[in-house]
Amino acid sequence: MIHHQKQIFLIFSIMVISFGIKAQGKTSSSTFLDKTIFSLRFVKAFSTVNNDKQSSNINNLYSKGFQAKLLYLISEKFAVAVEPIIHNKGYTNGSNKVNITYLDIPLNIERIKFRPFITPEDFFTIGLGFYGGYAISGKNVNGYNNTTQNVKFGDAKTDERTRLDYGINFSTTLALATFIEFGFNAQLGINNVTPKDLQINGNKTTLTSMGLFIGVNTNIFKMFKK
Image (cartoon, rainbow, N blue to C red):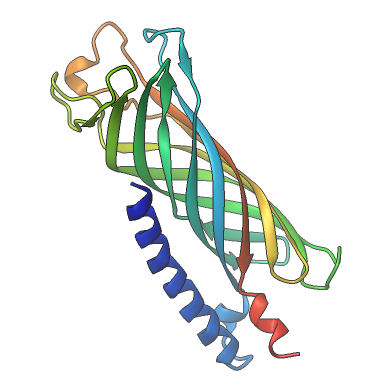
């Protein structure tokens, strides 16, 4: 799954770098690009499931992920941000592990504050919004006998998870030294990812994921123009 994450992240990288180069090549009359910042990030996250009917031995799953971001300024104080992220969600139970790769696409309204911490382009944002997610693939790892099985997706009794997830998204970013940024992301799932045929007697499973990230944004191209 990490191999697939890297392939998708490479596509994100090529797209973002291409947009960034084009943005710096435009004249000042290009209003949209002048108000746009692209970012690429590496994420270190942990996730868990929320289900009262599951074992009390459930623990967090720690994983890595990759994220791209498009931030568009709609005023001097506010911005709209789209932040597609490839990461894993799941849990551990003793030596067993459920590890599912998701593509989540958060959409935030962000409060942005430009402040010259180190350079004039430095800024801080705090954002709140919603996300939609899709399970790309998943593995059940049995640590007792060293076996791995694919997670079954669907709504039948023989399935383990639905593919779709959605919920509330929160993020905060601090961008320093012109182009370096780091911060915090959180996704609080509100969709029941238990297959419909198993949603009996109030059986409900939701997902929670939180992580720290570090990355770069297209303000880096300004350095080459100085």
